[in-house]
Each structure stands twice: as C-alpha cells, then as structure tokens.
Image (cartoon, helix red, strand yellow):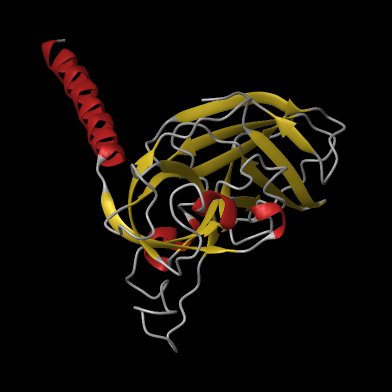
Length: 253
C-alpha cells in the first residue's frame, strides 16, 4: 500500500510541475514582428486557415491574427491567444507600449521571392503576426509597414461554452470547435452518439475535426482535450434531430 501511495503522490507532483511549466511559458515575453492587413470594418473576416469562417460570428472579430509558419505549427496553434505589444520603435510604437490580446485564426504564408527583412516577413523561421488594421492601430501608428513587437501566450477569455459546428454527410462527420477558453488550442476531440462508444476524431485542417461514422438521429456528446492536457466533456450537446450546418454549445473551461 505504501508503494501505491508513493506512486499516486509522484503522479500528482508530476502533473503540478507540468502545469507550472505551462504557466511559466504563458508569462515569458518573446520577440517578433507585426504588420496589418486592410479588411472590411477594420478586421480580418475572411475564412482563414483555421476554418473558423466569419470571425465576427466566431466571436474573434478584429482581435484575430495570421501567424507565420514558425508560430502556426501546421494549424495546431489555431485558437491560442497571444498578448502583443509594440517595442523599441520610438517613431511608430504608441506611448506606453499598450498591448492587445489576439487569437490565432489564420496562416501567414511565406514569400521566399522577397527578403525576410522586407516583404517576406512570414518566411521561415521568422516569428510574425499579421493583424487586423483596427487591432494594429491600438499598439502602433498605422503609417508603419512593420514594427518590432514582443508577445507571450496568455489564457483565452471567452463568453459562453465551447461551440461545435457540424458538417459532412451520412458517413463522413466533421465538427469545427470554437470559443475555447483558457488554452484556446485543441489537440484532441472525441465524439459519442447514443448508439456508439467514444470515437476519436482526426484533425482535418485548422480546428476542423473528422471521423468516418454515421451519427445521424443520435444525440451527440463531445470530449475536448487542450494543449495543457485539460479535458472537458459535454454530454448530449446536440439533440437527436441535429442538422448539418448548425452550431451547438457545450460546457466551458
């Protein structure tokens, strides 16, 4: 029994250490650059590489950003939150270096035909944020082409529960997961119908997850795992008469 207690204590201490390490990573500032793109209503509302669609409807709005290859991490960073501030540029940084919190919603592709110092800002291994014009204007003068910034991962603050938007066909099921609080980024999703066990889903692209299963005429439950290994299970989120194209709300972190 003593060995069992020791093992349980070890696992608790290991999990605590992992959480503290994750929190330390969230707090540390790193260097990058930022530009902005002009979009309707001063925000980025195009669909983007994370699959969120209209970013106003997805609740991200003007505080959305495209990330360079180094930060985007093949889409696994979608939904993560970053605090960004302009630094070390007396001409363009706003007084006091105010910061904004951005959600990763898109990919800023490299342009190897241009120098990484001018035009090829998203070339690997540069760390770069492509912001909306409105958000950029809160940290820097919009006359700037590019500004040096500092960034750090922060916890996402969301209103309401996780949102699950379903799509697909009778034997091909997809779900887009949005409005994820705390970690923001999702690394695993499972779905369960009333006639099935838990079915692991694979990342299709961005935060769209898929599986080959017929889940029609069954209430659906979801299990979501985030980057710091937090797990949240929302039971019977979608009713038995759920429809493709509809969004259903679950629990929140």
